[in-house]
Image 1: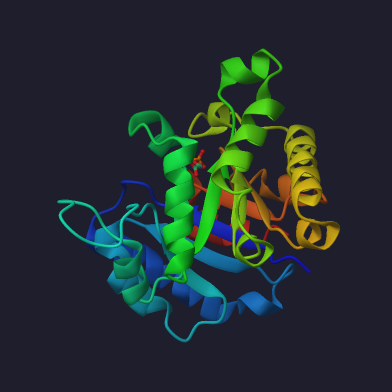
Image 2 (image 1 turned 30 degrees about the horizontal axis):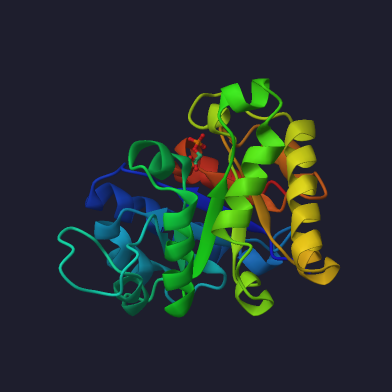
Length: 257
Ligand code: PGA
């Protein structure tokens, strides 16, 4: 059975104090509402800014199914790369996950599928689970090219992995036109793309691996629309931006299965 996941992507938001107060509220929520007892038994991941990660990870200790993640990592193990953070450093802080290929990294920092493949590789080599993001921009959807775009992102970024490696990856489908815009993909649009992604995994690997791959939806997912998105058979949860910054909203999404 594939794991359901609700992940919060804080992006470049919240001071350390604000971040800690949010993570404490979420930890409190998970203590009062044990995640493994909730509908869907979701794992919850907070992808925080690097500077928050150690403290936030500390606040999740001993809480079942509550984890942290970094929003990025560098492609090299160590060395003279001023300002970068390695997968090994992330791992050494007790962090289990890393976002790879968020559309903002692709758009603003020029990260290509080839670079992202290296990030996936170094994350796995350091025992960190990559959450690999894919998704088309509006022009690509309007041109009917969205399936091809996502296919190429997956083929180049992920489909060179062994079965064993691929099993550690979570996929997040985030149509770029839905991110931070308040325009959500309809449940039908989300389901259609998720089913397509699962079919690609099946063709590349096998049915068993495809059935066990967690595929999250991201893009203006919130407390109001999460239930109808998560109700789709191939939507296993969400990667949440704006709505992950308020404990109450995020808590409601965690309970949306
Ligand atoms: P959003 O962001 O929920 O604010 O649209 C999602 C994301 O970028 O991961």
